[in-house]
Picture 1: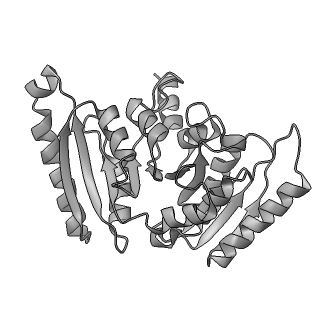
Picture 2: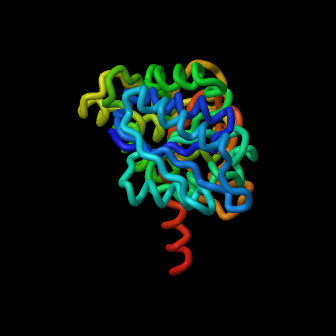
Length: 286
């Protein structure tokens, strides 16, 4: 599973909950963590931040995770993703909508660029789910109780299907595979609802054959961004899984569904790597 994690902290008060969340990721297999604080060259570190960094490292060790620390210089997303690659991490954990480096929220923020560049899945813990140490610890301790996997049948499903399989095999995991079909004439004419049910049914069967004990399938009609965002804030789920897409505009960096969900989610989000750097490379060679 995800034995090695890179945990990004900005050392703000909200990051205490993020670190506590990361310390409770035993269900995902996390036993080794690299705690990263990218230093802002414009102001440098402070004694207070040094103390916070040491305290967060100690909290992870107390949770039974082997901890290493890094304080790279420069732009945080590049440093975080580079360390994830060189340390062969399986997962990046960070916050969104918090203070400090992450204060601008998802679009155009550090979180956004990490998701765009990351070679591995990214677990985003929103401030509402990790506002305190206790809240963050609780959010990640019950992470797999009710997992919603939102799939887009008109996009490549392999990255999210692989991620769903990885999570589904964890002890105690319950997954709901969801596809939302737009209420349009084209969707009806093309039989998208039937096709969605068929594709999700095949994926559910694959997961069950692999040993996943609790997988269900749901196909709904309506605006995908609105419906999935409403599920994200409903309180019915403990984790949402998505596969962001790569767009050409900053405003829709990962598609309307991901943007809507990230702004309203009350629970952590596990995002498959979108491969934006690969997509950019391919466009440059056409």
